Image (cartoon, rainbow, N blue to C red; front, top):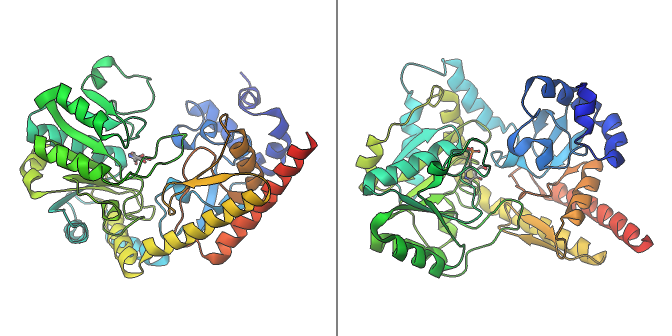
Length: 430
Ligand SMILES: Cc1ncc(COP(=O)(O)O)c(C=O)c1O
């Protein structure tokens, strides 16, 4: 099949002229990718997960809170690489620390000094942690944490929240391709903010449950985020403690962005293990799991390794990033910019007759329109915004970084206001 034909099948014809002019290099690269990569681009960065034919498909460079696509268009960014960029793209201190480590060699036959220093740093920073391990991606550590819980308890069952995402491994991947029934036979799902749903499940599974996975707030895919109701996570913790179950906090999306000691500090609970990834290395590939002393023996028995997991540059980047988060009180700054953004968006929407709600924490808001069941309004809004130079995502929570200052937020709100005015004008015409 000719490449162009394959490509056009994914694109709404009404937007194709924009695509062909302002995004022509993105289009060419995507056509080439389709020939040699299954699906062209896959996962959360695939065009189908955003706005096909409207969002650029490939990036060229980035700095601070802006990125440039392969056609040279620049955008004010509100996705931060889907989370990892917490200090802003190419933060000079993090880049310098990573470059200094890399200069000496980067990957050796054994870990470098930075490995121990980073473990010490994280254990010091996260209040309940007595140990830490490192990997590359979030999925590496969520799956490993599940195994540690099974090793520690000698039990098989694992509970997770309905709609929660914990990575790409067979026990939790959102898709069904290549998954067999047995992969998930011991995985059960309870409901967010409904402690009775958890207790009922724990009662019926009796002494078989090894782990309960939670997130600090609920961030289901393609849906608004939900904060915990008072006492929910505390009750999950006490049920786990009472029954000898390992409580695992998947803090990959929010950890160190909401609080420089882990997001559990914003709520009233302490897990047994926490998993971190986005926001600890400012874009350098690194993830971490931390845990309590009582799980250290079990943790030592669960094999954990990867060819690149000891790279010194990512360790140095993470140590520097974690220090800056604390030193400059970045989570508070990001929250205040998030407040400014959310207030600006909701006021602009109201002034044009729309109700926009910013769900979730201000550092990673999930904005949506009231009464938008088929998601048309948010898609139209984000489609207009990208043409005016702001990258807002219609189906995923947004992320703010320390590089988003007041002028950047005000620029984003002004763009949002223009988009809403145009939407209101077409609504009135029709
Ligand atoms: C809450 C949560 N858990 C786990 C993961 C998986 O992380 P990774 O994509 O780095 O494997 C993600 C990724 O978005 C996530 O948001």
